Image 1: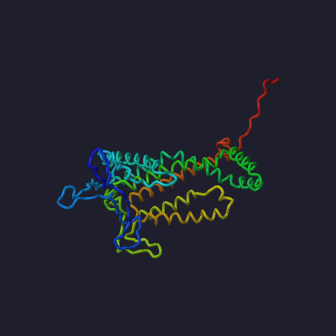
Image 2: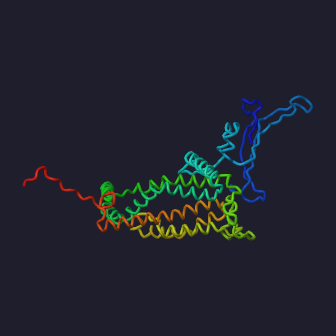
Image 3: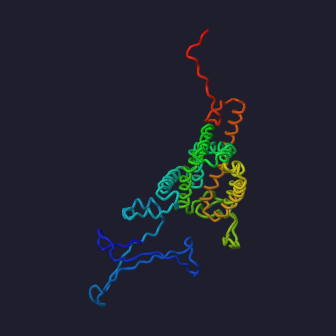
Length: 365
């Protein structure tokens, strides 16, 4: 709702206050995620003349937009552009990656999806192809991160020994650790930076699929996932609520179950182990618990999520399983070749650099 000023070039001067209120029709405690939002406006004090006289009544006109939050529609209409309607599209940014970072990436992803849809008129296939293309584009970064983390895990015992030996001298301890990492071609920071670069891209991709109106009523297969904006109900029944959790279950959804399988395979092939866990039993135990919880927690959290979102996560996870298997095989082959002496040990391959003996300036015969 947009109040219309009396003068097209003027502004609305009668609004004194505005606020929104969450409320539920059944009188229960308001929940911002499921409640109706009531918008309230307060006008300035107005004095009207008695009925029948001039200025005995006054009207406040509004323009009302009822439709999808679609950037294409907002960009085509001058009024919507001027009022910034595109800002109502919320891509769910966070403190680490605010909307100023997520929105441009998400809008770019949506533009790519729409362009692909003209060639492949199936948004389910478009999501799968887009995820695979993103995985392929980010593969060099992912591989570098995995290799660096693998080196750090192997150096964990030696790093722990240095920490115990120089625990009372922080400066010397840091110096020795840096020497160890430099000598072995590892970096504690570079192992995380590639992952940090990928996160906003995946968040934007997830938000774009979750937010876009184009998936409303869009089918993937004629017999399964007939609406990408709704859960992929294979079997429906009378809704019931899970005790303690308060979750209402309406149907048997297959995608979240497949997602759990994908998470389990991902944990089995390439556990997300931190280097310090190799020498810290408590941390190692916590990571084992996480390896069990992730395949259960995410499917439960996203059980009733739109099937387009779950299709994206499942595809990305299965693609990640294959990618991690390829990277792990690459690391193992490289280590076997180094052990057999087929590859010279250098700082880049994780071995100690052998200093070459200087050649004499002149050799006597």
